[in-house]
Image 1 (cartoon, rainbow, N blue to C red):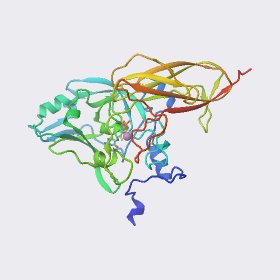
Image 2: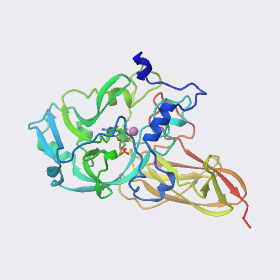
Image 3: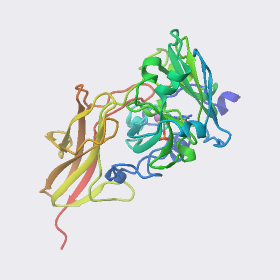
Image 4: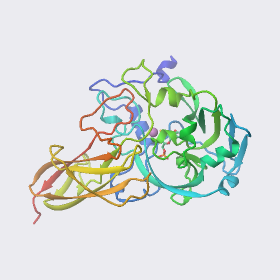
Length: 369
Ligand SMILES: Nc1nc2c(c(=O)[nH]1)N[C@H]1C(S)=C(S)[C@@H](COP(=O)(O)O)O[C@H]1N2
Ligand SMILES: [Mo]
């Protein structure tokens, strides 16, 4: 009976199965970046995408303490006030959900049905994690560091507090922050108040919100979110590879204005400056190309200035929309490590780390009189 009330297995939709009420409910809770917000260097609060596995917990900032325990020389318990009195750093970071693009996969993994809007860039203020771990003193036997949140839920039959692990090398990287502000204001409840981890370059799942506990482990972390949820795999019964850093992606700020239902864009014939953003957690973005003929031909876009290693970069491209009619605009990013975006959709069973080239259908209309 409970099997009907709790979804205990990861499911793939039938080839012709429409998005379900369950997926729609997730989509309504977990909002995406409205693509017109790609115009902002820093995503305004409330326009940043949101992903919450369970409920947004209410955490009393006054009573909050962060515990650091496990394979350390000295355990720590830190209040928010103490955390705020430590070294203060602000970093502009682009976060993207590992499930971005999932809804385009065929067959569709049944989960949060993102198209390509699960991204945002914020200025995160907090204190670097590495000095805090150094203060606790990692024992030589330390292997992984687990980060546990205050949120609690059931996922595929496993009851859990949301938790993610990182290797000691990844956890002690200088860019990791314990963030207590977003865009200059205290973290809002939905983004992890009062303190969250921000792991620049990693898909969003690593940036644990509502942080409660940091546990240094002498064995590899075996929690659900590392060993089951965020895996790249083709079949249900293989362990798969872990999802880690953000693959390159470029998005176009859709030009013109939208049709209400289809969101097809209407643009006038003539010159348009197409703009957008590009990012990669694997290596700095080295180039963006644009296609105005649905991917048949590509031309280089101009990159805007870098806003730091972890933030998306703007790009622009002048398009002469000469002929009235339908067109499909595409863009794709490449990074310095040679990672590119696929033009054909690859598939994996949980719909993770998809970075298929975006396609923006437009109707070019004759000059209006
Ligand atoms: N405690 C906790 N941390 C979490 C999550 C969560 O559900 N609980 N979701 C993760 C996922 S999957 C993503 S993509 C990011 C989203 O961060 P945002 O909602 O601030 O954009 O938070 C991550 N941190
Ligand atoms: Mo995510």
